[in-house]
View 1 (spheres, rainbow, N blue to C red):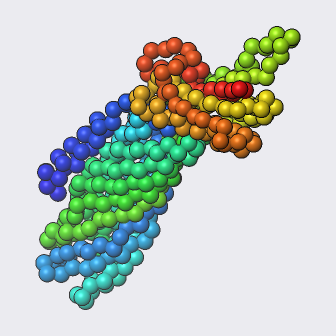
View 2: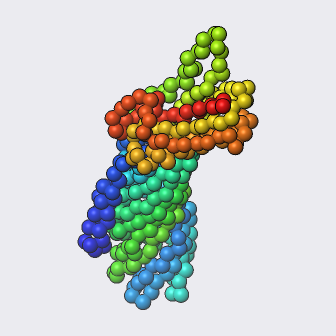
View 3: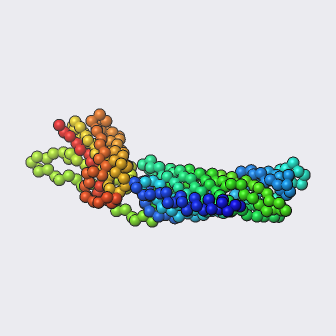
Amino acid sequence: MTMRGILLGTALTVALPSLAVPTAAFAGTEGFYVGAGAGVNWTEDADLSSYPAPGLGLKEEFKIGGIGDLSVGYATAMGLRAELEAAWRWRNSVDGTSSATPGLNNLGGKMSSVAFMGNLLYDIDIGLPITPYIGAGAGIAGVKQSLNGASDRDWVFAYQGIVGASYAINNNVALTLDYRYFATVDPEFELGPVTSKGEYRNHTILAGLRYTFGGPERAAPIAAPAPAAPPMAAQPQSEYQVFFDWDKAVITPNSDKIIGDAADGASRARAVRIQVIGHTDTSGAPSYNQKLSLRRAEAVRQAMIKHGTPANIITIEGVGENQLMVPTGPNVREPSNRRAQIMIKIS
C-alpha cells in the first residue's frame, strides 16, 4: 500500500475522537466506556485483477465469516460518542472463483481483515431504555488474501457506516446490536510474479456489551406529601412532585402512582385548571434542558389523561434549569431538580 494511505487512515483514526465535546445532556451514562462484541460478516464478491499474470483475472465469491470486536470510548453529554475500535473479520472462505481463463475456476482460499478504526456515533434519545444510534468511522485495515496456496496482506485506508440500538440494563451496562457497512480502498496482493489488485467490501451484524464508567446515580427522591392542612380546614392536596431519572422523560411506576393520586385529587376537588411545570438539573446545555423539561411536562400530561383527567384543563410549561428545588452550580446532576410539578387550581 502507499504511505499516503497509511498516513491518511492513521490521521483520521486519531482525529475522530477529538471531535466530541461534552456540552449537553444525552440518553445514557456520561463517561468513558469499554465494549466487546461478536457476530457475523458477509464479504461481497470481489474482482482480482492481473492474477496470476497481467491480462488475466477472476471473480471471487465468499462464504459467511465471523467478527470479534473491542472498543474503548467516551460518551459525551450531547449524545455523541467517540471511540477507538479494533475488529477482526475472519473465516470468509472462498466459495468459488470464476474466470474466462481456463484453470482459474473454483480455486480455494479465504479473505480476512484486521482493522483499527476511529468512530463517531450519535445516540438518539427516544425516552425509552432502547436507544437507537448512528455513526461513521475511518481508519486502517490489514486485508489478507489467501488463494491457491499463496497469501499476502495489505494495509489500506478503511471506512464504515454504523446503525444500531442499545438496551440499557442499568446506568452502566448496555446491550448493543448494530449493522456495519465496512469497506477499504482496493488492496494489492503479491500472490505470484505480479501485483494483483483486489476489492474488500463487507456487511457485518455485531452484538455486544458496553460498560460505562460513569459514577452511580443517587436514587431519585420519593415525593413527599404537601404539609397537612389544619384539621379544622382540611383541603385537598394542590401540588404534587414527579421525579425523573437523569436525562429521561419516562414515567416510572412510582411516578405513575403519584400522578394517579393527583388525577384522583383533582377529580374529587373538581379542579378547573391543572398546570404541569417541567424542570431539569444543571447538567448539560440550557437549550437542551429547556426542551427536556417540556418533554417531562408533556409526559406527565399524557399520564394524567390516561388516569381520566380531561385534557382541556391541563396546561404544560417547561422552565429548564431556571427554577431549581436544590440550588447548585452549573453541570451538576441533582436528582431533586429532575422533576415536574403538578399544580391543581380549584377556582
